[in-house]
Image (cartoon, rainbow, N blue to C red; front, side, top):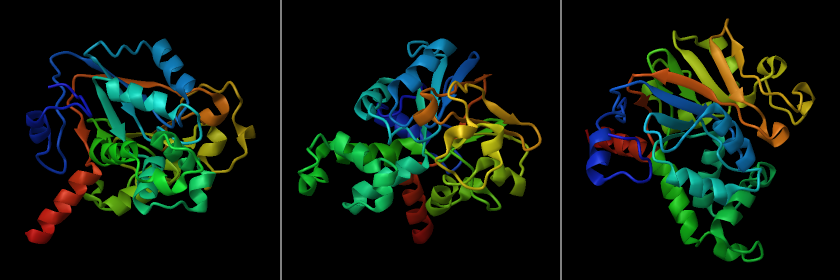
Length: 288
């Protein structure tokens, strides 16, 4: 069965929702390539150009795209990217802090200062297709409801292989992150993945975005808006062999380019839960 997020048949949905540590099956009769990018931030050129250069072909059934969070906000190409992602036949979406921000804003129906600072309000307005002057009507937009459902049913906490775990940033600092709560995963999307691995260092290599990939940035405890640490033509994936971390956030708002990390394997990936599946699991636990 193919990964076809957003366009699965009902029988396929039932087949992949078996337990909290399920594998959304990808038929692996041969090796497949997983093209991993993160922190697109509504920048079409930053996403498409490096994917093409890396050889990604959506028509190739052995090519699977993984977006490791923060698809939107800050850039001007939200709708273009959204429509393109929805058309991809083989895509896995990981939830980042900006997906959480957009989800909360749509549900809350009024913005916080952080929504302006992070560009989330502009993403919401663009998706709603309603003028900024019609603020009372924005949250009634049908397109916003569709995007909210998409985020809640298609974006997962993590993707895991035998030797890798892919998240937006870090992962919950609990005994078993596979069983962590929505709140714990939400909080983990804001952390420095390099700091996280100094606390808990599992055997698997962590592939994460969220944090600028220069060696200087990897050692900072807080994100700043000073991009002087990263040259404008910076295109190098940062790997920390001591911490077993691969950083792929290229700060697209500044570099105008995502980084692409490729895993070639015949394994079946294990996927974390979506918000909808978290809620279903919690409901069953309460009943149980």
